[in-house]
Image: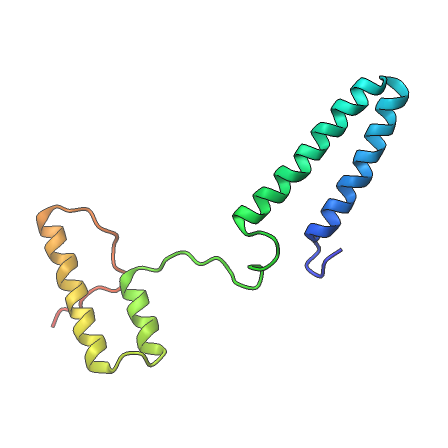
Length: 123
């Protein structure tokens, strides 16, 4: 079992193959060879389908270290860039002023926008 309490992709495939063997043997004993062949074909197709979907989605373990992040609103992104040192204070304030003006123009025009997380201070 993995360190996070879940199973790795390899462990899942191993469990699937053991269970598949049991089902195929039971089908041979109780239902006959035609049913065993059909069940084997379905199990093989399901293995390839699971493999294909894990490759397509990228859930094969390569992306486990990177958390999935929801996109932040523009002001939060701007704050993050300023905190990371990508923007000077003057650049930050200019871009923030531009974002707030754009938000106010959109509100006056009746255009629905995502609310900014920081409101302009009225002086």
